[in-house]
Image 1 (cartoon, rainbow over the protein chains, first blue to last red):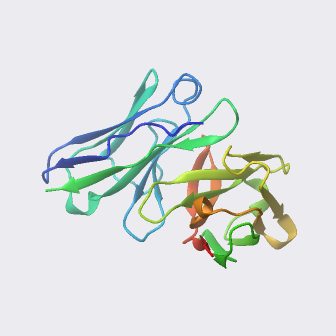
Image 2: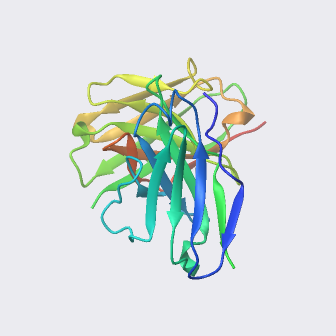
Length: 110
Length: 117
């Protein structure tokens, strides 16, 4: 199972919006609405931000939103804040009943 | 409050074995799938293994046949037996709780496994 494809880095200024993409295949992202997104600050454990493509767990700001089209899922962060600077990972369930992560995207808030 | 505390990491020689443990609290452990996810230093997350509530098990291709996941519901504990370790297994290993939509909603702080001679 190959890792999902994410851009290595993305950046934006405070208040702006950024979108992070996650591309898989018809055996994972394209096959199920089981895509989730995780935020990880350096030295910390990952934190769930989005589940089932577009749902936010309690406590996650509505500035974070998710979507999916075909084999590509996206995480959009609007109204960027300094504390959003982190690494972001997507994850998907697969047709083999395993899970797969993306390679991660480093978000820099300029 | 959900708490997951990993232990058992350390330095091991190539070809050696190690058993990781994860102590869970704050939720009904027996009712949730559990996972191991690892992260080499400075690199991305890699899903390793999962165990369902009926003890069905799943593994990534990179560890299948070498690692064994298990759970002991009476002790609220998750385990990962790792055999035939190689340098490529060097990573922080996280225990994660499964949730709706095949998601990991809670994570431990991780335990570092270093495979080196």
